[in-house]
Length: 218
Image (cartoon, rainbow, N blue to C red):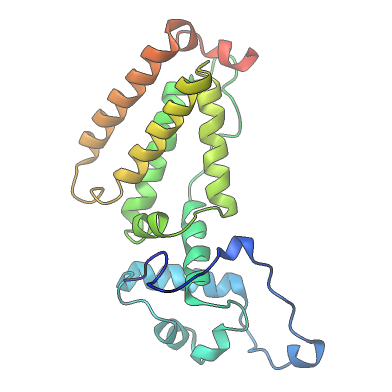
């Protein structure tokens, strides 16, 4: 199975490394019909079908009808490609656009929706959980998810250590449910999520949860 850093290996995230453009005289040599987006989509399909342990660049290339070396025109390493696939999967569900407005569901309901959407991604793609633990998880969709979570926690009115603790509790809860997502019934997940949200509400106080419109004007 792929891990974050194999023994003796030093690597950085694909999101922190700028790829040098291929020399103009060699661009025409690149395989036709391929691009990074198509390769990433094929990676997601292969991971869904065969799992992380069986994934290889050779299998991926065979599915695309190209040689394995062709893939390295678009990614430098297999690890880079797995990071790209991870972030693509995290972009599958719709995030709340902003803080709740007047008359809309308050942050507890919106946090429920956000967490359930994340759980669905873990259930649909069992390889996401181990990759989330293995890689920095700082792609654009991962950062958008965290920004959405931060906005919801802003609406709680919590500050300082309590605010930091709430963010850590939600993040750790979602990451921790990854390994058990296919074993634990959804009802159990929702019950645990209710308990977590109740704890945040208790810290926040009734004024932060009683009126959704209060969050919109904060």
